[in-house]
Each structure stands twice: as structure tokens, then as C-alpha cells.
Image (cartoon, rainbow, N blue to C red):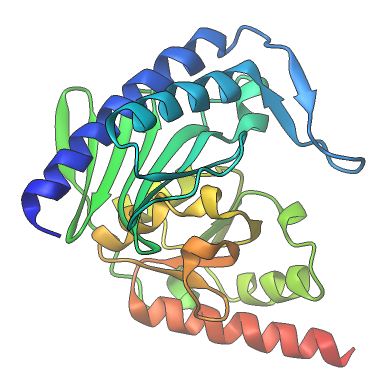
Length: 272
């Protein structure tokens, strides 16, 4: 992809985020009506902010790039007629949103042939926007642009670790494996959704370990972490944009140690 294409798509992603922000901010801290998409079990909330933001994004993509595919959380997949596909989560962190916590964001990713090339994460209430593209990541906030660099942490023993909630670890042995890895880290934090990955890119957090993610939960965050020098993959080492069990680390060495520890934890759990 030539730079002019990247610049065009980055500019368009910013327009998509601006349109989504109009929809989400209208409902934030307004006690919006909330539906539950879950068929029993843990609540999976959705609001008109989620739906309205996705509709706005979809309409703009369909008008400007009619051959591009669209994968979103709230509506059906629109197949691509070429190499490009947008993967969007209009409101990642809906539980935070409906409880008034500003740890949510709009996630917008452009993939080419299944590989994320541009990722944008926008938190319009705080006024922070993370954008990742080939070779760099930036944070736009308070009318300034800061180039992002992940930390230099290379060992679990020195790492700060975070995950959104232990409830993500629903598969066989996942929670035990996470706990096995977490025991060797310097610090553990819960909560954060998409913000955790922004903090890895910004160098404030060293490691994120999660599971049960959908492609729209993670695809936009891959270019942001990678553009800052970090590494993101599945626990197996597979492509993170497919979702599932995810590790995001500040350095390749930390990523490799985390994966080894997680898989060792899975093996130990299977023996019990």
C-alpha cells in the first residue's frame, strides 16, 4: 500500500470516529435504555448509542467505499467485493458506558486481505484518540499529537499486567493459566476494556492477557500496539485479529515469555 492510500484511509477513519462520537456522547451518563443480548448468564448489554454509532459508521463507508466489506458488532456482515474490510466495534466497553465510567471507546479497523493495517480507538468524552498505522502509533489529545512507544519491559517479573475481568476466562484451563502467568508479574490490574491496549502502546502498561474476544474487540487495537513497537497475538501465536485468547505485550521477549507461561499453565491445568 502506498502512503497516499494510507493517508486517505486514516483521514476517513477520523471522520468515522467523529460521526460515532456524536451518537455515543448523546447518551453517555444519561442512563440510556439498555437491552440484554445474552440468552441467559452474564449480561451482554447494548444501547442505542452502540446501534446509532454503528449505523452512522456503516452509512459513511457504504457511501464512500461501496466495495469495502463491513464487520460490526451490532449488524450483519457486509461481504467485501475486494481486498478491503472495515471491522468496527461502535462502543467497546458498554458495561463501563452504562455505569458512567469513561473506559469505553469506538474501535475502527481497516483490514487488507485479512490483515489490520489501520486501527483507531476513540474516547470522545475524555478527548483521547489512538491511531495506529504501518510503522507508527499516535495519541491525539488536547490538540496535541504524541508519538507512542511501548515500554522496554522484557520479563514477566518486572511487568505490569492487566485484564478486563476474570470472567473472560471461560474456556477449559484459561483462568488457571492466567493466574499462573499473573503470579510472576510485578503488578496486576482489572478493568479497562480497549483502554488497556492503548496503555500498552503508550508505555504505561506492559502486558494484557484476555480471552473470549471477538474480532471486532481486538482488530483495531492490533495496529495501535504494533505501531508502538509492541506485539499482539493469540495465546497460540496465531493472528490476534481473529479474536479468542489474546496477549498484547510491550516487547517481543515479554510476549514470548507470557505465551510460554500461559501454555505451561494450560498444560498443568489439563493434568489435574
